[in-house]
Length: 173
Image (cartoon, rainbow, N blue to C red; front, side):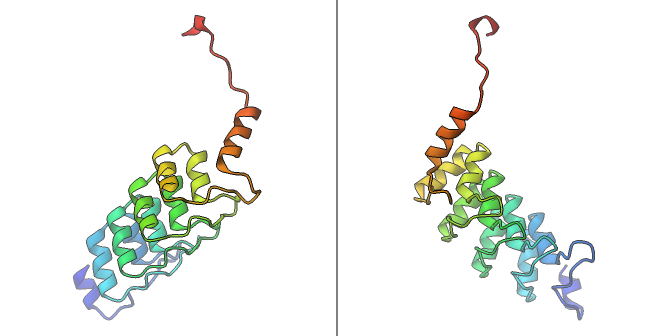
């Protein structure tokens, strides 16, 4: 990679299929040394692929905490959203990557943004059953009101009341 970066080329050249740059590919795959070299070569941190995702979003979605930390330190914008309204925090939360969620919360990523489904990162984590991630949001005092004004507790109660859970008899256990 170092030898390639010595050639006269643009480090932000994107592939034809998904418009992903080398920085996005390296971030998505957790190649922190390559990410560092690309940043040193002047790669743009906040370019977007065909889905509107940045290198930070790619690293967050795949749970690469060291890469997320490096990109944050390099000044990557933490609250950008993709074509579906998902931020890096939302992608990490819905994928159950607690260490990445912790880093983004410490970097003061916004917790009250809403994606195209009408969910915050906290709600996505709760809906997917990611208890540790939910705990991180609650410890960070993340807003737990949805757009409809109901709290997460209200929504969980409503789900419990409207979902038919089969009763388990003592004979089957």
